[in-house]
Image (tube, rainbow, N blue to C red; front, top):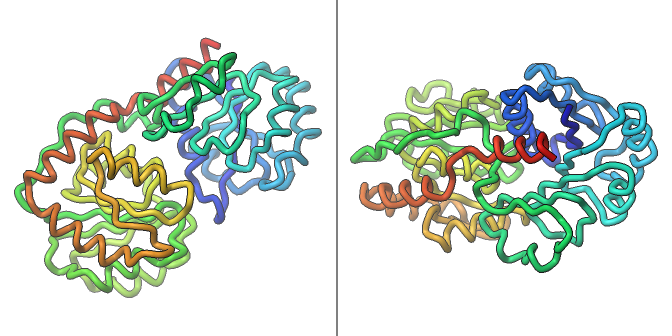
Length: 334
């Protein structure tokens, strides 16, 4: 049995749970089941839907040190030998205490402090800047985009067919859209010049109902919420526009030409590295830049089929989609 400690809510959205679910799915394919450990019940419905058992600590999600007594009791009662942690709320003290009683693995992309863990996983495209090899001589390290934890649907997507013209656009903002990028895009871009625009609202996007009402009569604009088959929309799109995060790696696996933007500090390294390496154009930080204006400019550049072909090739060269399977093998094999 694999145990994963993670959370989701309207503040941190769904990213941590979704990427660990990908690992759990890959482990299930190997015959190993997973139990999730949660601070509260906000991820419960999703886990039930995916048929994964879970334990609720009934603690405060953003004060993980306070959960240690409860978590330690669970570890003793369940005889847990190894736990995978995926949360930005961890602290140095949390890992120092936890690693004394259980083998600990952590998915990192911030390098916020020195992690006292047995296994460290960093799939971020900017992992080299953290110098893990020098700083973690006694830790198992699994580094690079070959460890991006994507769902099975993204394994071996095949070469993307690049259309001569952009007809289908996919617009995403992640679990939330607190800055209203989706609404601004639809109001400022000439949407009638595209045959279809699929707008994916995250689970915690409060504007979903408003968007559905406002664009109900627009035959080429379709508003969706928390879709379960995201890979279909990505594969069918000629061009995607997305906030930073793991979604960009999913788009890489599909080879879908993409324009990115940032809406949080933890996305900045990600989107800037994709831009620097020539895979995904970056339209700015929504908190300080006119992102929609920049997106429109990038869309003009991406109108050229040669640009989209080159971007697609570079994206699929970076991500093969099998990272979740590799992480599952690490957790199962020890």
